[in-house]
Length: 434
Picture 1: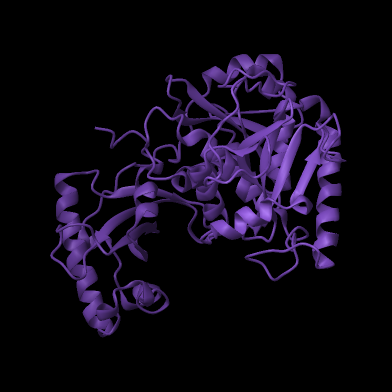
Picture 2 (picture 1 turned 90 degrees about the horizontal axis):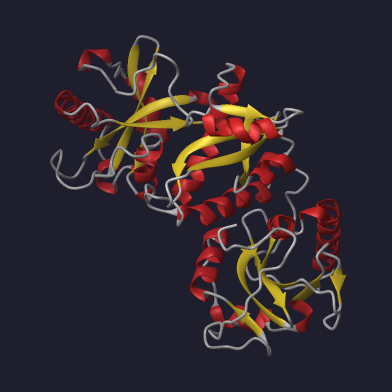
């Protein structure tokens, strides 16, 4: 690990942190590290503004303290085998899974900053206590059942949820928040360690890791094994993500398979050869992984550039119906009130201008990759100016261009924001670095 911690041992914090959570001491020898990061993470997961006073009051109560050993057995506060203290925040993620702040016990002093639902935090525990992995998995399920029961009885308070917690745990697991937060957790861990801050935000990196999982499925089906190595029972796969850390090492990621959805899901950053061995890869695989090509989103022979003239586009009313009616609310309010023909004219004028620029700069159209089943693969984005002259400042929208048969189409329009900026660099990671 980057901190020098060895697996199977708790990190030794010689100097206990003195910063208190928003100037509050939760309890003697009980501290929250980097409170701004904790709050930011919670607001990102919940999409809610966190009420500080409520949160501090809530996590200070004894009944919201879970003392756990290194197998995640629930313990009393005075037990000598406590490894973790999980603080129930009273908030849930978008799938109604409760969020905890995890503190590590170091000689009776509790400190930490990690936020997540029980499954995410249990995965962190496995990273330290890998030899207890099976017990941790089983005990996590026990903790979830206990929490669900107490929540149903009304003994647990939530600030942003009126429904049953863990309500979605029985639906198709691709939608479960343990997967969503797993990827977010990995992206958060990785973001500040990248040699180039290619993405505007952690969310941009998270999306990139997800579309890698979609792309891997197609690469495996095509047996393009220069991009991946499968473990012994073919349930997991390791890839070169194309990313580099801040000491210029390739970032390798282990993904597992979801047959029902036809995707692979990011599960673990490879930090050592042991990580691969523990995931069922062979010793030979740990050597061969260095030879993997960085993942590619372009099929063999496919151009990375949008090479097109205006006559290569089908801009018939039928092809633009989706943009004009189903996506009309994305347009500025003054444009929404225009007639269909007026909006079409604006789209055509913008497209003609964009294609002129494209002839002068072949990278003007930004390639993007989508895992959407309706159009899975590479598309391109071009700016759409509506209330200003073409090329003046940032556009209000972008047009998504796809190849359908012999012609290109404007498949949809998207609002221009940080997310779009991240999508514009996702499959061209280092093109805009200087």
